[in-house]
Image 1 (spheres, rainbow, N blue to C red):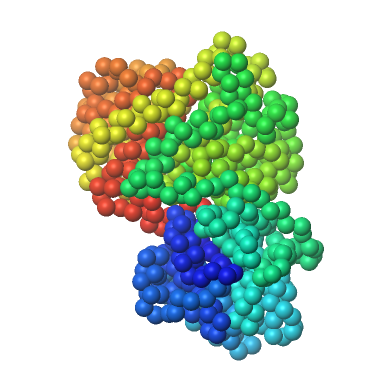
Image 2: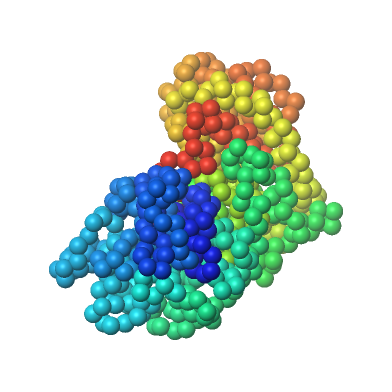
Length: 615
């Protein structure tokens, strides 16, 4: 959540920062601001609302000149979204200006102490407290800005990614990180700062990703100097070559990033198994897994920790792992994991799943698991992210940048990775026959084709969306491997259309939710050919008897459910263990088209952030 952009160099900073903020809009925000240094004064403009509102206001109110600047998109924590609470924030002298992602948990006690020393505050934010603490240290301890930042950050409790500069030192930006991501782009006689690489990808392919509790002094004409915030140790920065390109972060002719990402799934699923899965040779290999297979197959259990959509992918994995590998699996909300004093041992394997690799709750769960001696394996999409560095080993998905806040291709690529892990372990453990192993490899290799076929039903799904766009509630039902898909379908609808929706195991309908069913209740039922098919048919009959409106996801050629359902969304037949990769597609499209018809901001739904980097 929130977005940071900064620039120092020979170019005009304003267009770089503004375009960078637009690229970070996917992270979720409620206000935006920018500060530029024109050689004489700091030009500051900020506003509640969108980056477009900031652009219009800045064009009216400030001089858009200067080769040094910082910009920010804020997602409110301390203080309501308004112009005053928006970032950047000045220090009392007006010399320092800061932007900040994260939360300073002890800001109130710091603020009280600063007030005693004569400091005044215009906003309700913890960020204004931080910039004045830095200035107070700078003045009273007579230290340079970088040292003052280091001392201040040793006094604060919480999470942060910050960037700030001093009008008296226009050749320098100081940045620091704990919990929130921060990248430094290295150009020719210029530097970029951002929450991720997307704001500067057209200018440089070289970046430094700060580790937690590291800070950097970025000064023109010098190499970036990185040091530990605690202990003051200098760190040799690792300059990483970026694999991102500009085309990946543009819409490519689609109306929304979410729709583009839904349609990218055949390609990115293939990218995720490319080089790892060779069906004709009977091979599935994942580099991060091979050296640790014994840890997995000898584990007492596997614990999966994740949040949101990644948690649903973990639930699918629970079915796959227990079915194929015969190892007990528990799936935990990362946000609850460390607060319930979980029992973790050295014989446990913990799999942490996160699209961004920066999810605060999942990172906290990783740290707890490691402290108990468990082996921790990460699955994430972003190369160089914190989770990829904090885990013992892991596997990247290859979904490419996911800009839409509501996750789609991350879900299917996570399941793809988890299915490959399960197959590799089942083969190593001997819990799968050679015939079934080869069958699953061939079927997994065909999934991109099946997803492509499912996407071709979009026009039909659009018609169904028009019928139900004004519904106030939805139920989603699934059994077995497709119960988590029902949860994910309901989540998608909630996230982007703001319609109340709940997912349940179909068998649980009679234990409460059936009371809600009447002629006004749409019920989405995943009713593909499977071991549970007859029982799902019975559930559909119960819904029909109570006049519920049935939207069924069915296998190609189905006749029984088609006769009972009011509407059907057809998908190619796939083995049940892999079916979530296909059955989720019509549910994504249904949510998308309902939201568009309601005029929702599909890529940036209200109150949501793409990467939740604070608890």
